[in-house]
Length: 188
Length: 224
Image 1: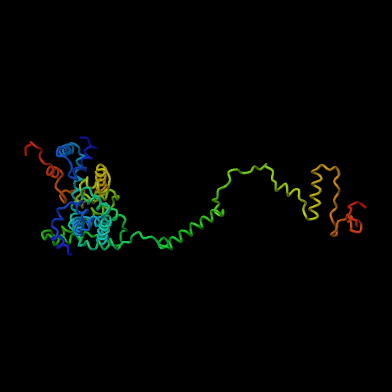
Image 2: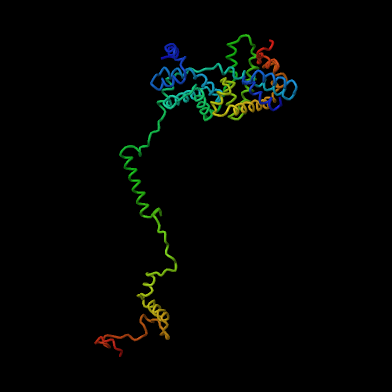
């Protein structure tokens, strides 16, 4: 028997589960091996010491009664649902929470709504931009700038110089109703 | 109903198996559950006491273990003994329970009990044995939980390897290995104490040869 096998047999010896023939083999090996002999002697010492150390404990008992067990079993808290999940209040709170969540999703607050798969390309013409570009601004200075850019865009040869208003009025001549009282639009 | 009257009124309960008692208790037979309780009460109490070293904790562990069994009666299906299941619950409860500060199980308390039981031993011998017990139990406390449980279940509760394997839910080979390494760890720890090193056999046990020889039965056909 090798030393390793002998060590494995020692635990069986202490638990009383070693076969008679194996016990004899272990003893024979311990006779020829000083290291295993010392190990066997020490482990036997420890085994007996453990047995004696727990001996007083083995004689101790308790006077517990089964009634105390039943009392403990009945008094232990069961898995009780919280108040917000009981009865009408529970149903109402669950329905309210469901409605609120649905409103948030549909309103897009949580950004959970389904997004369109097709994203318009950046080069696609924008009808709104074109419309805004063709509309002259209402403010006078901006209108003159807009007019100037429009003339350049259509390739006008001579862009009239624009003189910005001074003193709150344009320095171009304003027609009055007396000049064109027939409202013909003809130049003077 | 007191303990004695319960035991007297149901002598047949002691002969019934755990499985029969569980089924009877499930059907509302309170005496059956009481029989189960008295059958394993002390063992579970000692197991909790050996791990926690606190008698009040050990009682609480016993009560908690049986209250769990009481509430789990409808689901319990013991194939043989209910002990592995109960001991496993008790071991888990023992290790989940935090130790109270300042409460230790004194080996002197045990030696005082020995004093009343045996008047032949002198106080010095009892004190020496108490000191040896204290050293051994302190060495056991240095082991890891897995190794300590195996030691306690074998040396205190007297379970064999197969029963320990059922309690800790692992193969027998693993239990054997844990016990072997636990003993080796104890050997390393106790080698620092001269009480166990030079002449431990004279204090605690006969020589190894005589121990082995006394444990060996003669082979069939072998001369006596």
